[in-house]
Structure formats: structure tokens, C-alpha cells
Amino acid sequence: MSAPMSATLSFIHRFEPGSDRARAPLLLLHGTGGDETDLLPLGRAVAPGASLLAPRGQVLEHGQPRFFRRLAEGVFDEADLRARVDDLARFVAEARAAYGLPAPVALGFSNGANIAAATLLLRPEVLAGAALVRAMVPLAEPPEADLGGKPVLILSGAMDPIVPAANAQTLAGQLARAVARVEHRTLPAGHGLGQADVTLLRNWLAADATDRTA
Image (cartoon, rainbow, N blue to C red; front, top):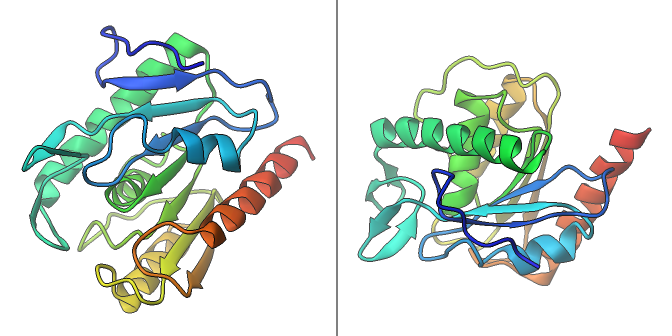
């Protein structure tokens, strides 16, 4: 069962303790209009036994929660994004202390994937890796970062009307140059999540859990 939302941490969130210590906890980061419950079923499906930590984005766009502001579709307020990455990093540190967690692997969709990518580049110590579903380049000029071989999965949609293929490829290149171990897959899909995403996420996370116990 989900733990109750906690007023003692800086984000409204849900936490589900896991039973499998071989699995890294998942930091579930929803897309625009989602909330802290949106990705819990996905997390349970792709990482059975993992602890799940799901915050709610603190920015509202026409009443819809997001993790950072944007100026237009695909045009991000980078000053706000950088500040929100620091806020998210602070929350992760709070949650790790409160729940006794190691560094999580982020699983983000759309806006959530974008802040996860930005967190990797701006605060590489926060995450153990990331699965980025329909992510795009979050920072026009990312800082130099050393991710030390942390695993990153990017799942793009060939027919995605929001994320151009070249943009997703640029993100993969930025993360590879930051010494992430990047796997980039493009699916015959649009912007939404499908069963192919679920299968690839499950297999990638299972391989990550195996690597941790090898």
C-alpha cells in the first residue's frame, strides 16, 4: 500500500516500500497534467518489488501539474528548470533520509522525463540512472557533467508530434558525452505510452537489477 502523503517532505508524494533490495528504488516523474498516482501502476508493472517514490510537480499550467515552467510547446523556461532541479534534488535527499533509500533510478514520462534528464546533467549525484520516455533536450547549453557510466534508457516515438527525432538524438548524444551508458530506442509510436514501452522498460530495469547483484 502507498504510504500517506507526507507534510514533512517538500513535495506532495506517494511512497510504496519495496520487497526486493536488488532493485533500485524508482523515482516516478509524471507528465503534464499528471500527479503522484499516475505512474504507480507502471512502476509496479516494470519493476516488481522495487520501492516507488512519486512526487507531484509543483508548477501549475492552466491548473495542470508540471515539474517546471515552459514558455511555449517545446520551449522551456531554463532558469525555472534549473531552480526546479535543485528543488527535486532536495526532495530526493529528504525522501532517502526519511525512507532509508539508496539513490533512485528515475522513470519519467514527457515533462517528467525532461526534468529527469536535466537532473542527470545538472545534479548527476542525485540519480543512479534514468529511463526517459518521450524526453527532449531540456537545456540548450548543458554543463559538462560526468555520469560515470550510469545507465540511461531513452524511449522515443517515431510519430511523436511533440518531440522531433533529431531532438531526441541530440539528447542521447549529450548524455553519452557526459559518460552515461545510453540506450536509445525509437518505437513506432506517438507521444503516448504503449505496451512496447512497458516491455522495454521491464527488460531494461531487470537487467539493471541483475547488474547490481553481479
